[in-house]
Amino acid sequence: MPNRDGRRRFVCAASALTLSLSPAYAALAVTRAELKAAFVYNFATFTEWPADALAAGAPLVLCVIGDSAVAQALDRSAGGRQIEGHRVVVRKMDANGPVRSCHVLYAGGIAPKGAHELLEAVKGIAVLTVSDLATFTQQGGTAHLFVEGERMRFAVNVESAQRFGLRLSSRLLSLAKLVKDDPDAAPH
Image 1 (cartoon, rainbow, N blue to C red):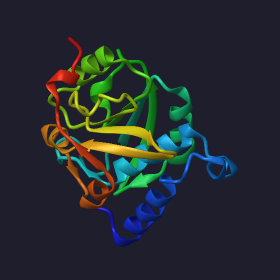
Image 2 (image 1 turned 45 degrees about the vertical axis):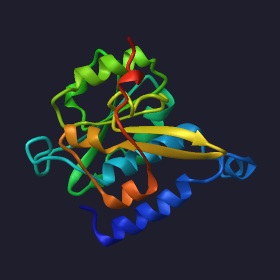
Image 3 (image 1 turned 90 degrees about the vertical axis):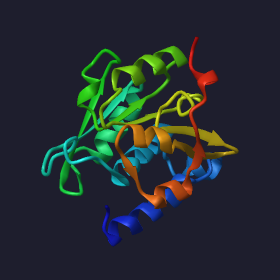
């Protein structure tokens, strides 16, 4: 798990991530894509993968599907950095790409059917799945980014993280809206 300095940086980042999307937000020149990228990076920072899914010294692969702006922002801010001794690698790919090679998978702008197909494609592997689709966590995804009021927030499906073999930091969970699977959220 992250060291004390890492935790302090996360708390500062989390506070910054809840910045208003109002004119004060615009004055900071932070785009929505940069904000989403910061969330994705921080999710990776506060997630623990099983040893067989992320071997010591192996790169931590952050994948982005469907949102070039988030992929670019994530690559600029996180590409080449280190998380717990793992070099961060950012990959932009399409939904038919090698998604099983990802440790974190952000899918932006997808439809419920596409989310269902994506979650089926990564079933049985340790991958933290994130999307901006409203029903994503209810469909079995791990995290959902959303705007509430004028703030960027996130929801987490803890059962999903457990199914994927991931351990999420209690600090991360304390900032999240917790949700559960909802069979009615899946596309029919």
